[in-house]
Amino acid sequence: MNNKVEKIEIFKFDIDIEAIIMQSSSIKILKFNNSDIKKAELIFGEDLNNPSLYIFKEETIDGFLSYYVGETDDFLKRIKTHDKLKEHTEIIVIFSTDYSNKFTSQQRLYFENLFINKIKNQIYDGIKLLNVQTKIEASKIHPQELYMNNIIFENLLYLISILDNNFFKKNENIEIYNAGENTEEDYLDISINWNGNLTKAKLIKSNYSVIVPSGSVIYEPNNNRYAPIKSLKLARFEENNDRFVLTEDLFFESPSSAACFITGVSSNGWVRFQLEDGRKIDVLRKSKTKS
Image (cartoon, rainbow, N blue to C red; front, side, top):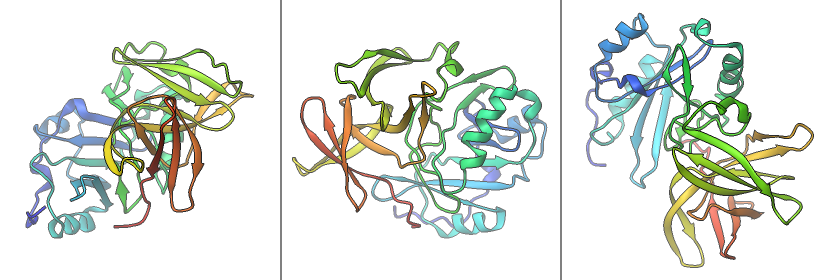
């Protein structure tokens, strides 16, 4: 990261209309990427020069993506003084426009509960709206951690997961279903059909479950190396309500083997997973510490 940002004119960045990430009764997020912002003005009929909040993404030297949030003036100042990321800059803009009339009450409830109430210092799960007026469709899965004034995650697009299986019942791209009880009483095997790719995961009914999306790297202490992984989103199983609930705990990452479970958590943030094949993997959680 040798290039310095001397000047960035936000509204010269292009917008990918398909990359609408989320809207709710009070917030809309757009992901800008290589098309004309004027198109968004035509589609949404609002002044895009007056968003309430900006998020700027850059890639750090260690390969992680950092997101910085701020009001217009602070945000622009931060960009101009910070190291520039690579060629395909992505700008995410949060608007305060009310789009509640375009969603059902159930959809609004999901957005408000999963995003509005969790945006401050908590992980949330966002979905991508391919057609904001008629259809909700989950985007590709990526890990994330969102914190006001200090955002560190890999991609804002993330699956809402299994808060309510019926929510995705008619979605051809995602299917989450129980594959049958495991022989161990406290475990449940599930299968996740993601765009035609079937992935199995082991869920700990009495503690945490895992959802397996794409990933990046993990440290394998036994081999003293970083290896490609798949990422795990923790969820809690509420037996009384017979459903899974995303926890507000941290996002952990695990190797490409989908089936694993937590065997211990260290005081310094490492989590040990026991894989089905017997391997033990230590995972370092992403930090909330401001950079």
